[in-house]
Length: 307
Image (cartoon, rainbow, N blue to C red; front, side, top):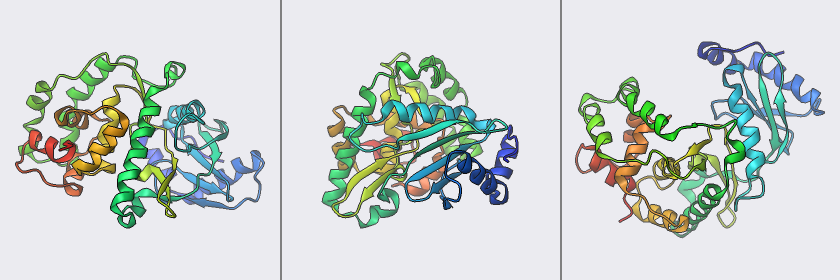
C-alpha cells in the first residue's frame, strides 16, 4: 500500500501526503489486528505517527529511514521499565512493505511539556528539571553494548572529526551570518573534547517537546522519540537539555545537572552544540537569550552557564 521511498525528495512528497499515507496505515493496522480502529495523525515529528484508538501509537519509517525504525524499536525495548519516567512499550515492530518499517507502541498519557511549559509554576519547573536530570542519569547508566549493532557511531572521535569538518557549511546552509561563521573553526579548535569517552546511550533530543506531563501536580508521565539515539559522550545529551528544557536559565540548568550528578563547562556544551547532527544556530539565536557579546564564548555562557 505504501510506495518505495529511497530519497529525500521522495520522502518529502510521500510522508506529507495523507492520501498516500492513511491507506497504508489503515492496511498495516488491519494486519496487526486493529482493523476499523480510529486513526488520528499527530501533527508533529519528522516521521508519520498515528494514534490507533485510545491506547496505541503507530510510527512509520520509509525505506530511506528504515534504520531509524529498527533502532527505535530496539532502544524502546532496551529501556523499558529501566527509567524513572515511563517510555512507550513496544507491542510490535518490523518490516511492512517496500522497505517501510513500523513500530506499534503503547500510548503514553499526559500533555506535551513544551505546550504546557508556560502554565507550569516556577517551583514545579524546578522539580520537573530535577526529574529530567534523574532520567538522564538513569539512561546514561545503562550498558549500551546490546545496541551496538543498530546504533552508532562506532568511533566517537571519528564522528567528531566528521561533524567538525562540516560545521561551518552546516550553519551556512541554515543562514548563519559571516560574523558567526568565521568564529567556528577557532572556537572548536580551542575546546578539547574526549575522543574516546565512556560510551553512554544517548537520546540526543532531550527537549520539552519529547516529555509528557500531568498538569494535576505537574509530574512527568512520559519520554518518547528515541529514533535518533546514539552511543557516545554523555555531554552530547546536554545540548538539547540546555537549549530546549532549561532554555538559557542558569538556575534551572544547575538543578538539572545537580540531579544528574555531574556538571559540564559551558564551552564544552557549546562545542557539542556546533557539532550536533541537527545543529541550527540561527534557530537557537531566534529562540534563546542573546549573549552579552556576539562571540561563541559569550553564547556558551548565555545558554549553558549554571551561575
